[in-house]
Image (cartoon, rainbow, N blue to C red; front, side, top):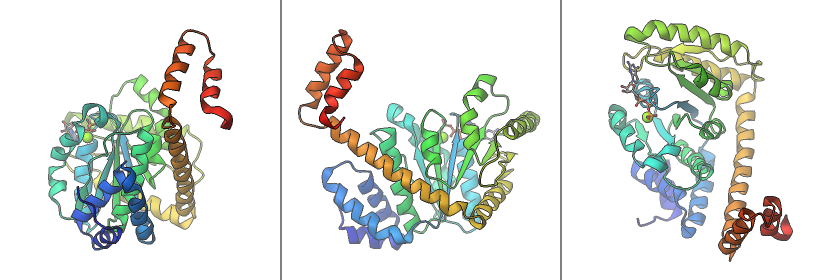
Amino acid sequence: MQRLTPDQYVDGILAGDRLILSRAITLVESSLESDQVPALQVLERIMAQTGRSVRIGITGVPGVGKSTFIETFGKHLTGLGKKVAVLAIDPSSRRSGGSILGDKTRMETLSMDPSAYIRPSPAGGTLGGVANRTRETLLLCEAAGFDVILIETVGVGQSETLVHSMVDFFLLLMLAGAGDELQGMKRGIMEMADAIVITKADGANTAPADQAKGLYQNALHLFPPAPTGWVSPVLTCSALENRGIVELWQVITDHQSLLTRNGFHDRIRQEQNLEWMHSTIRRHLESRFYHLPGMNEKIGAAEEAVRNGHLLPLQAALQLLGPTA
Ligand SMILES: Nc1nc2c(ncn2[C@@H]2O[C@H](COP(=O)(O)OP(=O)(O)OP(=O)(O)O)[C@@H](O)[C@H]2O)c(=O)[nH]1
Ligand SMILES: [Mg+2]
């Protein structure tokens, strides 16, 4: 696609032009060498207009109801007069290539809402790389005037930690009656959650959802108290019947006011910025190393030597890293 000048992107974004916002996001997502400097220039120039949104991360296992929840929750927020952007970090979209298309049809009403903007997750690259671009996309959306940014991720592996490192409020969606082993797996994620929402609390699932709420409330009590003073609540909701949505938004605004009052809001964002800087450094160092001239062949030879037992993995790694190691 033809590129605009950095100023054209900036003017368009600040004017709230969706088309230009989308093109600017494509620019910051690009791995083309020639896009790197203009992308940085755009980001530098919009920086002063960022930081004013409520950044919310949403996670949960596939099928828990994330997309349906975002649709209902997003509509509630636009109903309150808020502009809502939906971003996704979806490691599975790289494998299947299809899940976001599915999402767009699930968020049909929201995607047609003039106050909402849904951006498919960036494809390709490492999870870390994709996450970095999501941070930058978030800033572009803030500069374009979005009040609430929802970042969705599938509940697998590292992606929660990444989303957690870029949001103010981290929401974990859970199903009633999920197996013990699943709950065990989720412990680390539960500890990061600012609220747990039991989804699909409707029909025959209402009672199990209430039961699950009690269980998770007890489980959360076992975690050490958060330094922010926030006590993570457990709620039930039905996205289909539009229940629990108002209450959840209240919880999020309560959280915002507490952390704004006690200074943690800014402190956490500062720490997230440092983490962003370091993860960018790590990503660039790694990419620089693997792209060194002749590195492919050297790695091939080293792999062979390690496979044959001629070299210890540590020796091989240190040799490849060279004098800097
Ligand atoms: N009864 C009921 N069903 C729901 C509710 N929310 C979602 N569902 C259903 O649960 C299924 C999965 O919902 P999605 O919103 O696609 O779930 P998801 O977490 O986005 O799934 P992935 O994108 O695959 O990770 C769909 O068939 C929805 O209709 C709800 O509040 N009540
Ligand atoms: Mg989904």
